[in-house]
Every structure is written in C-alpha cells, then in structure tokens.
Image (cartoon, rainbow, N blue to C red; front, top):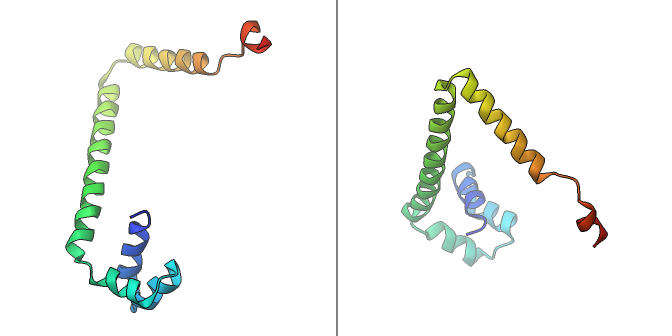
Length: 101
C-alpha cells in the first residue's frame, strides 16, 4: 500500500509491466503476477478516494481564499497582523526561566 502510486504508474506506463515491477520493487515473478491480476477497479477506487479527499481539501482552501479576496483592505491587514502575531508567539526567544533549565 505504501507504494501504490508507484505501482499504478509502472502498470500504466510500461509496455511490459511485469519485468518492470520485478525490477522496481524487487518482487518475485509470482508477486508481480499477483499484482497484475488484481482488479484494476480496486486500484482505481483507491486512487479515486485519494483524489476525492484532495479535491475536498482544495475546495476548502479555495473558499477561504475567495473569502479573503472578498474582504476589505482593513480585514486583510488585520488577518496579516494576526498571522505575524501568531508567528512571533511560535518563534519567540527562550525566556530566562526556560533557558536556565
């Protein structure tokens, strides 16, 4: 499962995927055959699920960016200021008490 994207890429792009799978993943012939015998529908479902999650994440990000673009200049400046404050808190130098430990 960790290499599913690479496996799918090899299967899609190689003229002869079996020897390519054996070489790329150090598989036996039997293992390569078993992978190639898997129903592509299962592989496609895995990829579709991943794509769907990615699409939802990007849509949320798009909505947030569109909201920011629709905000006035004062609102944008306030958000930027808040981000600076948050960054400053997260990267603040050690206090004497913490540094002494």
